[in-house]
Length: 195
Ligand SMILES: N[C@@H](CCC(=O)N[C@@H](CS)C(=O)NCC(=O)O)C(=O)O
Image 1: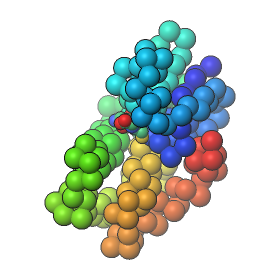
Image 2: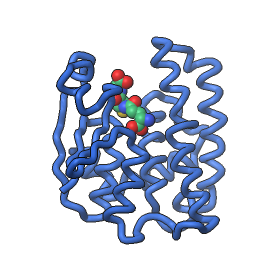
Image 3: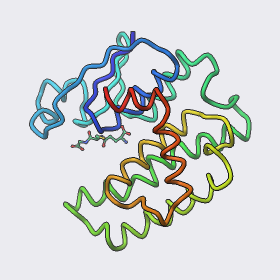
Image 4: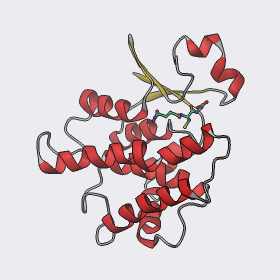
């Protein structure tokens, strides 16, 4: 059974949501999301960068949420929740998954490192530019790649919810907001958020 270390509101929601969508039984271990715990030798022994989420499967330990999603799909997905490998749709699926974490969420990480860097200025501008891309992508469809829900929507859903919490996703992006609400109405998402 997969074990996922979790704290409410953090990126551990992604792999948990995915497991719930796939109907997998998982062991969720809630940990304290405090600087003290994240810096503790006990935590650093399994999560060397001091981050959440963390996934364990037998002797495998992983500490990057997008990579966990790929592993869960490889090991337990049975072809579900992602397009067939090697197709153009799969290429775009990879692109949205990576875009969610490494491009759209990046300014928040920089702002945090700069201890409150200017999300109202340059960094906020960068987020808005990327949000406009998402807004346009879901303008005339239910999900990023059309009418089928995929794991890239989980990657994106978490990032959009994070940006909404920081008041960066607002009614300038009505399609992205509608898309987020639709994602959040899914039973698996609600269960992951309540975990
Ligand atoms: N790209 C990483 C980001 C991990 C990350 O920044 N996790 C946050 C929680 S959502 C964290 O552990 N922050 C604590 C810290 O940076 O001290 C992933 O997607 O797993």
